[in-house]
Amino acid sequence: MADKTYYYKNPVVGDQKKLVTVAAHFKNAFRGADQNLATVDGLWQVSDAPTEVKADTQYDKMTIRTVDATQGVITMDNKDNAITLSKNKDSALMAGVKIKTADNDTLRFYIYKTITEPGEYQIRGKVATEGATWDPQNFAGFYYDIKKDIGKEQLTTVLTETNKLSGDAPYGVTYTTTAQAKDYEFEDWGSYNVIGFQAEKYFAGYITNEDAAKNIFFKESTDENSLSSEQLEKDGSVVDSKVISPSKDGATMADKTYYYKNPVVGDQKKLVTVAAHFKNAFRGADQNLATVDGLWQISSEATEVKADTQYDKMTIRSVDATNGVITMDNKDNAITLSKNKDSALMAGVNIKTADNDTLRYYIYKAVTIEGAAAANKTVEAAPVVEAAPAVENKTVEAPAAEAAPVVKNETAEKPAAEAPKTEANATKTATKPAPGFESILAITGLLAVAFLVLGRKE
Image (cartoon, rainbow, N blue to C red; front, top):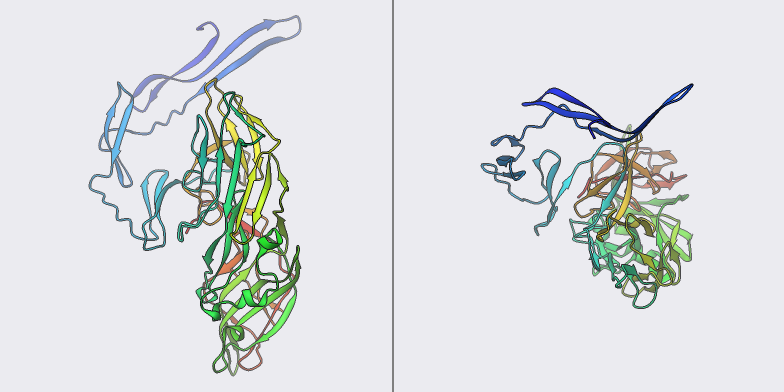
C-alpha cells in the first residue's frame, strides 16, 4: 500500500504534528513509447484548519463538557445558559443548530440546521429497516404549519420477505392526506381549507364559518369546494375592476373587500381567486390614501386529483370531497428495495436505499439552492412549516403567484407570495387618486412568480 499511495504529512495542524491531510492511491502506472499513464482510483483530503473541541469551549448556548479521546465521544450541555421556550422564539443552540418555537400559546418546537451553500439537497425522513410510517413529525418534506399544528400527510410502507413493496393488495406503499381548516392571515376573513399533497401545500376550498360576516369568499364562489371538482389550486393571472367603499358609514365586509371571481378554474365555476381588504380610504386636499391590510390569491391553474390519476409509482385511489381525504397507493407498481437504489414514488417524494447489503432506506424531498454547482447533500430537518423544508436563509424561485393590487390601473407593489397562495397581513398605505371615500381596484396582468423559502418558518 505504501508503494501505491502518495501522502502528505502536514507539519502542524492545530496542536497536531505530521498529520496526513492529502493522499492519492495509484492503481497502476505505465510507461509507453510516446506517453506515460497512471490510474488514480483513490483520493483523500482533510482540512488543515481544525475546529477546537477542548473541554469548556463554548458554542452559543452549548459548552463542551468532556472529550473522551479513547472512545471518541464528545458531550455538551447548556450549563449556565437556560433557554425559555416562549412562543415564536428562535434561539441558536450551537453552530449550525437552532431551536424554534411555534407562534402559539401551546408549546411546539423543533431543532433545525441552516444551509446556504448552493447545491442539490435531500430533505429526508427517518431511516427505516422494515415497514415504516412517515408524517410531518418525522419527515420534514411534508407540509406542516407549526403555528396551528396543521399537516396530515402520511406515507406507509409494508415489506414482503424479499424487501419488496408489493404492487398487489395489500399494497406496499399507501399515502393519505386530509384537508384542514386554516385561518387567513387577515383574521376577519375567517378560515379556508388547506391540504398537503405530494409534499406541497395546496388550497382545497372555501368553507363555512360560524360568523356569517366571514363567509364572503364561500358565498361568492359558485363552486367553493375544490376537492368536489377533484382538483387543487396553484398559480395564475386575472383581469378585473370593481368599486368598493370601505369608509362609508356601516361598511360591511363586502364593502371593504375587493374580490375577483374567476369564471373557470379547471372544472370549477366562479371561484374567488384574488381578494384585497381595504381598512379605509381617504380623500385629502392634495392626496388620496387607501390602506390595504389583507391580501389573498390562489392560482387559476388546477392540479388534478381524480381517481386513477397516476404520479410516478403512485396512483390516486379515492378522493373524499366531503371529508377532504385523498388516498394513493402503488397498485401495479411493485418496488424492490435493492441496495443503492433511488426511486420516484410520486412528484416531490423519492425513496432511497443504502449502498449496503443490510436494508436501510428513507423517503426524501429534493430541493435546490440556486448558485454554483455543488455536491448532493442529505439533510434531516425539522418538520416543514408553511411549504418549506427546514433549511433557511436562501430563497429559491418556484412557480406560484404574486398579487399586485392596482388603484386606477397604476401598479402598487405588494409582498411576494408563498406557494401556492398569496396572503399578507401587514398594513400597506397607497397614495392614489380615489373618488371620494371609495377605492377603485383593478387587478391586471398578474405575474406568475413565487418563492420557495427554505426554512423561513412561522
